[in-house]
Length: 130
Image (cartoon, rainbow, N blue to C red; front, side, top):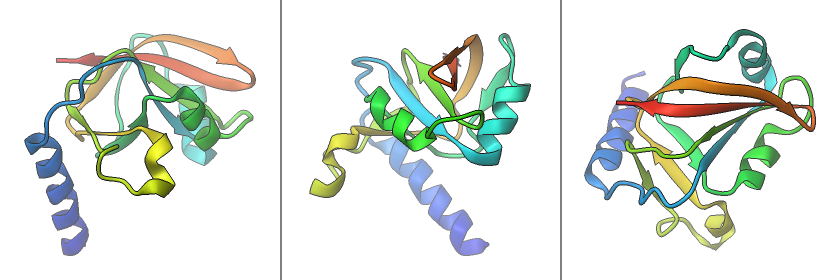
């Protein structure tokens, strides 16, 4: 547990020290499985949410949709901006260059502003809270 906590602190320090994500376009995060199913049932417009720790987002919607999969347990979060985040696209190897990954701080908190179904997935539009 100590090693995991230390690694988490290292990632958080990295996000704090790196330049903020430039905010050029929307970000997406895909979730599936039991977590996605619980979110799809329980999360409602107006509620606040955090990602439960440092989280990975993509500027490519298709990447998040692929990660979320299809079906009742498939959830995609969308946010128009994310201030507590940094892009790591310049750090990843060739195998992951197309992900356009952005790492968000565990301190990022969101409000659900819209919820809808698209192609069997639950889509939550989020706004970051200051």
